[in-house]
Length: 86
Figure 1: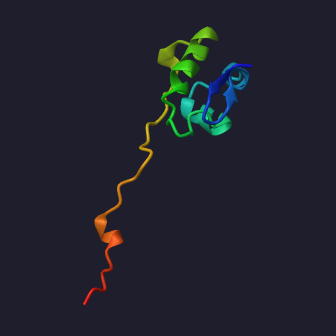
Figure 2 (figure 1 turned 90 degrees about the horizontal axis):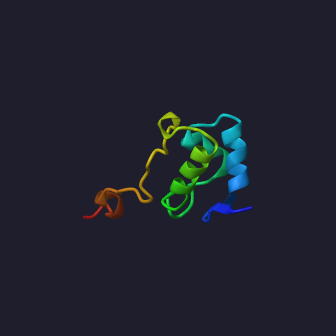
């Protein structure tokens, strides 16, 4: 079976299984399969997953897309400073 998400090693077959069960929310698909949770942040697999939806006859306007989250979080500089400086 073809690997769709290389970061998490999720196959097309596993993704198709959930699409056929009616999953049209890519955030839910991510929770179920881990596709899109890897280092690339779904940059590689999202277009492939969208293609699978289309191949299964699901129009793209019926799909809830992944919520984009930054891979890194901003941290206030004060967290790195010892506030007890005399």
